[in-house]
Image 1 (cartoon, chains in turn yellow, cyan, purple, orange):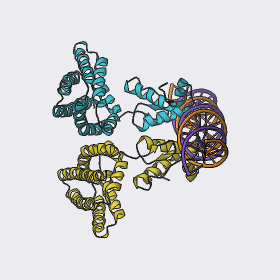
Image 2 (image 1 turned 30 degrees about the horizontal axis):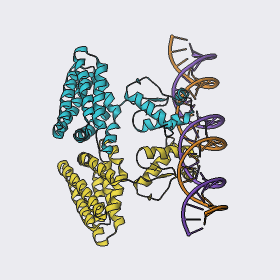
Image 3 (image 1 turned 120 degrees about the horizontal axis):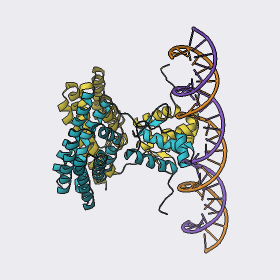
Image 4 (image 1 turned 60 degrees about the vertical axis):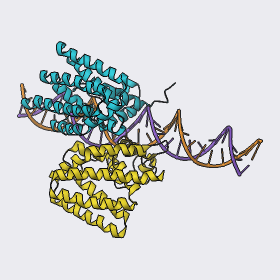
Length: 216
Length: 216
DNA sequence: TCGGCATAAACTGCATACGAATTTTGAGGG
DNA sequence: CCCTCAAAATTCGTATGCAGTTTATGCCGA
């Protein structure tokens, strides 16, 4: 076994972190320790540990009736966009150096999937492609602290995706950026990547504002 | 009462966060849940919640025999310096706009304290002054997400302080930066603050490298 | 039909208990 | 005096139970 005695609280933490990051939880879902405990056939305690940890890390929000996905205020989403502007360009530039050939391959496949959605209009596939690209380059970020910090606002990424993905204009912009970003990653020129990722974040912010503002 | 039912786990969390941030724990200290539980006359459970939270947030490290202060690897400290370079200049610029007259007053007092240590050589006072200045401007950062992210690597700040504070050259540089930074904050010119804080972080990194490298 | 109020249900926080893993201790043999 | 190995102590993870609090439910009167 390469399982050096995994504790249940860590297993549950990893499992739900994965589910959250893969977008498998909806807004309505309520996580209650007793229910999750039954799912894993353990007591409430390791579940409580895991859910409270996810809560403190911002992946969940604790209400008086179970844990649920945090509902980010638009103001908070814009605050996180500021963080992303500051961190992601540099992080992506650092990732460029550390990327393997297999990573590049994954990225190209995601680009192909992304571009196929122009014709198909399959937003689920676009979601997956976007997620694949993001996950791939973030995993390649060599600075662990930077990587962890970026991964902590996954909830914002998903909220923005949910808000903008059905917007045709945002869809086209996103697909275009996917190709250009992967081209930059493949070229290995960190400077190009840095600038492009900055533009990508800014474009995401613009899309979000465009979708949100007229709705008021 | 304006105490809307504080939970013990939060009380314990706050108490120990404060002790850690005030530097009241030494490297040798071992926090064991049963002992802390006795200190607060509660069971292990709320203590475990608090200590595990502090651990996940990076303020403590869990060893096989109790919790202790995390010993950051130099590599990790340098990684966090990269984060600080990216975040703190912009955060300080944002804080400049939001700073009150009382904040400026606090900053000037800290500068006075800081400069008095040139003659006295009182490193404890320098520590406090540095801490006061940092806390004041960080609290003024209007972007909550940015503020929380910056506050999360408090352990790095302290590790760097501990490593460099007794270094005479680092001492002089720090005191000089204190005055110039507060002048910039007081002037209200965000651009000046941004550049100065970047230089401040870079200077901190240099001091750290200088103190660490010859030791090898 | 609707609002107020009491009761039930749900959920969390904390206490206590036990087993497992790991470290420390200490005794006996070389 | 040192090494080895087993017993003891320490600490952690988990189970279960109870109490307090908040939310939902449903009954009653207007």
